[in-house]
Length: 303
Image (cartoon, rainbow, N blue to C red; front, side, top):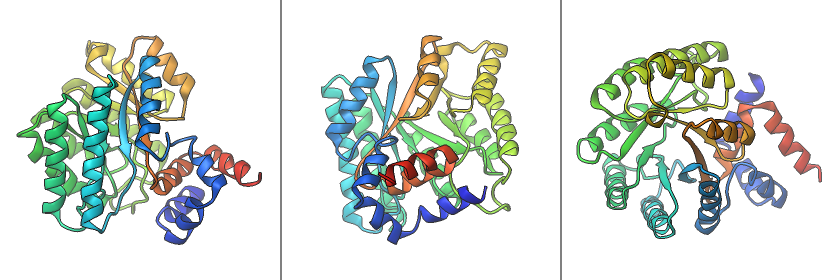
């Protein structure tokens, strides 16, 4: 727990970010979890995953943007990536963060950028998932998704099983018919807001899973935990939910054998495929999730 908290704290330290982003060894190590720094690299990776039978969601990395021009540039990058993917016959949606679209600057700016991305995605029949961030953005993220969904059905939300509020949020999203991706949660939060014990998070994930399988709209379960995966499968069997009506979502570069096994068993598997130069925060959260990931980085830095 202490290592995880330390790494999550360091994920927001600008001085360490500057060091690692300009360190060739760290940049190479990041490629374990990040497809590349350019759109071309991401689309090439997406094409290869499609060829193996996986679906993809692209994440153009970046968060906590405080410059309106950068937020606009991110908006255009998402739209351009989708248009290029469609032209190349690549099956992919996109995952966006509101802090990347400018919500820290102005909520109206973020809304206009989200609207632009969602409208352009709808034009090419692609799906937009609004990623969850720290708990201070949970409310505005869900409000914007619910507002957008009234006009554009190709948008979905993410809920974190670590947050106490998620069962109430899920009830509202299910009522609205909004697709939900369920995750454990990768952000450091106080006990007043979030569960601190991993076993408690797993139990809450299961409770939310049951509600999603029973009443959700095209739910997605984002976990590499085989116990939780088996629970999802059991719930789908109990409620007689066809495998085409839900999917597992997994991170690029993690648990590849598990991804292939689920796909071979006939389950829909979507790979979360991040790319871009702002990989530091995402990379540090991946290290925080498992000590083995941290050892992976240390081995690279020694050489």
